[in-house]
Length: 83
Image 1 (cartoon, helix red, strand yellow):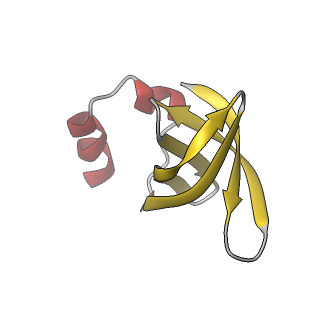
Image 2 (tube, one colour):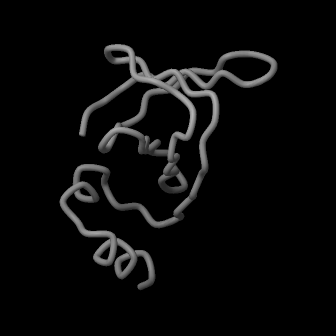
């Protein structure tokens, strides 16, 4: 896992935000209301910048630190969120 600067290339303008990259194509953004997972379907990594054109998103309202999530299995994470 590492911190990256994500550049979302939408139709109108590019938006930028810091996020965590898990694996090759999962970016996690930590917002005050929870975590947003984006599975990048079209994009590429260029150093510490991830240029994203398309993704699928899942928003989870439970706060679990990104560092803790990386050490959990998916089943562990789902059980924490389901409580």
